[in-house]
Amino acid sequence: MSTALLYAWTGVVLCGLGLFGFIAHRHLLRRLLAFNILGSGSFLVLVGLAQDGRGADPATQALILTGIVVAVASTALALVIFRRWYRVSGHSALPEDV
Amino acid sequence: MTRHLGRTLSRNAFAALLCVVVTLALAWALVERPVPAEHLPQRVAASLDASGVSHPVTAVLLNFRSFDTLLEVGVLLLAVVIALALREAQPDHPDRMGLDNPLLRAVMAWLLPLMLSVAGYLLWAGSSRPGGAFQAGAVLAAAGVLLRLAGVTLPGFNRPALLRSGLAIGLLVFVIVGAAATAGGGALLEYPVALAGGLIVLIELALTLSIALALLSLFRLAPPHADHPGDDARQANDGADASAEPRR
Image (cartoon, rainbow over all chains, first blue to last red; front, side, top):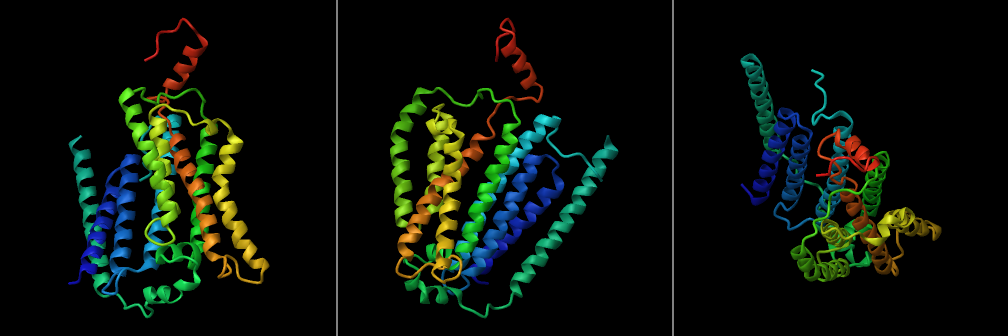
């Protein structure tokens, strides 16, 4: 088992945890945190696999850097929308539809 | 009640089972992954001389795959625009953020020059070693957040036109430089080799400003106005009626 695979498996476990958190919790903030854990896991998979015995891969690192900025922007936007939703409805979760 | 609890438990157990299955499938897929046909680091290193910068990540971000970065800056701007649009609909009274703490102010006097020089260094270092516009922008935004938490209002933020042009300048410079490359007969965002280094620094300078402003705006756009949904109306009444009970 290589180091790259260890990193990637850690990322996969984070993905699984994030996915479970996203399904199990209804509170919007918890869901946002779960979404971020899921995203971090996928970043770790990508950047971990890319250094597979061939040194650091600048293309993947640039891709992850782009992804991180977009994740930060979407998280901040989600927070602004959640606050708006909370002010409008008074609820911290979306209505159940199932 | 017990039935409801039982239902939640069984639902969570089902979800956990599914997530474990997905995790195992992903882990197995990683073991059985195909070997990439092309060695990307080698290819980046081979054409690094033509990129205008000597750090491979910066070369990929702002030259080889600059279209990705352009779209990313667009996404950031879009997020701020949506947040601004949601903000306009809210009552615009002073928020409760801003701790008037002498210790915080004293620490800030030490930290701010340091943060500004770190941001400048990161921007400058980006062309030859780890660093670049995004890191510098993030440090600048953190300095702005610190100022905001200490209750210092940045002068430009009260002038929407100035703030909006600052937010847009990164994307604007990027698009203008990218489009100018087509005037010389090249492809979009294909910089002339001789000018590439200077153009990348120019783009990074504008990007740093815009990214810092975008992150700071996103932070400022969700201020703690009220703890409960009803508080806004109550506070508005307080403002109208001078004899109302004292505010918290």
